[in-house]
Amino acid sequence: MSADAEALVAAATALVEAAADGAVHTVAAAGLTVGGRVVTGLNLSHFTGGPCSELVVLANAAAAGDGRLVLVVAVGNRGRGVIAPCGRCRQVLLDLQPDVAVLVPDAGGATRAVPVRELLPEAYEWQVQRAPAGERRAEPTS
Ligand SMILES: [Zn+2]
Image (cartoon, rainbow, N blue to C red):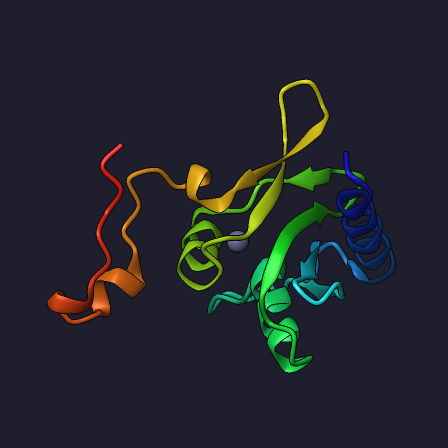
């Protein structure tokens, strides 16, 4: 794991261990911005919905004026370690941060950084679909 990845895992782990309550807050995330800042966020569960920690990181990075992320990771409470993003977060990350990489656990218990595009193959791309037809970028052919 790279030093950047280790720093993000450490930041998210520290936050989830300090703030998770096992009910409303159960996951923390950390993101590394293009500017080199580590931004963290905590999920907020509620029956009406609520943001996952990765989405809170996106908002917190924007609020800090350094909104472009290069790497993001989520860590679960109760020692769950690095967890893969849910489907909604994959879609939001792809649409808002298409160049970000995401740390995911592998079958052997290690983590690896994966471009978000690889986490959502054959994806619906909101930014492409909402652009006027003449302004849509060409899709890759291979
Ligand atoms: Zn999520």
